[in-house]
Image 1 (cartoon, helix red, strand yellow):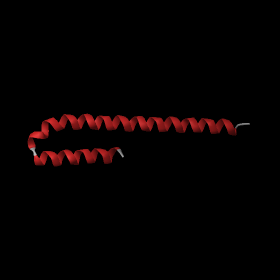
Image 2 (cartoon, one colour; image 1 turned 30 degrees about the horizontal axis):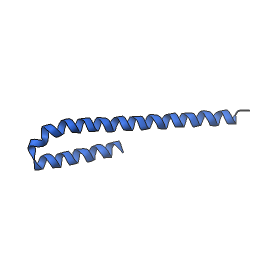
Image 3 (cartoon, one colour; image 1 turned 180 degrees about the vertical axis):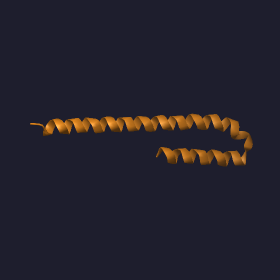
Image 4 (tube, one colour; image 1 turned 60 degrees about the vertical axis):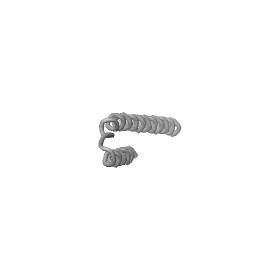
Length: 66
């Protein structure tokens, strides 16, 4: 998902700049910020997944012990 989102943002930025080269500087900062936001959201989602997985693993292993 992260890679696909980054590719989409990059493609749209390139298309906009191709139509109006004066947009390059303003779009560049915005694109960087948005890609960082996407990266943070993906990292947070991965962290939540790991925590949920670990929680389920510890619950199931405590249930299976006599």
